[in-house]
Length: 221
Image (cartoon, rainbow, N blue to C red; front, side, top):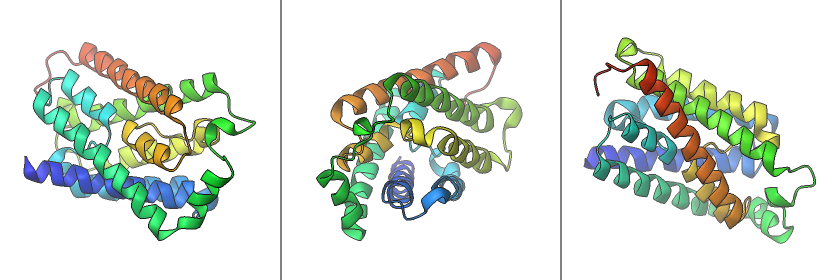
């Protein structure tokens, strides 16, 4: 258990650190989705064999629903990844304080943008969180894909694709743990944090139930 939780904490820490510096602070510019996708791919390959590389409570919920993770372990995963993202947010603020302070000073949160619309944002978060969880279940859990060598690439690519596709619409979080970091950096407010997190978990559950319906005889990993 210690190895799993350590891997989840470190993985989520670096996932949000990459997101915050490349996208929120803007250091990677238009290439932020590439940086995030490549970083996530590397982290997934580094952690997948230890913890299945969730880094995301919506993914953990999916593993729980598909009976690939026990309740206690699922709860601990959620606690650890939220802590990892929160610590990464504070680390990013120390590394590059000015861009994050500017968000606070200028009231530049996503919800204040003139182009922000709640319904398109929620639909974006639902669809691409669904896509992320769907890909993870099919490359990391599906019986017929067991032992494949491409799972990390598939997961990194779907996140990068989502960020390119709807980053300007919703911020492309797809992850309640990432929402914690965005809340700390005041990119989203508490209300948007709650709504985003709920829609992301719902998307993960929908993906899980569809996965179960088409793979009824799978073996738990």
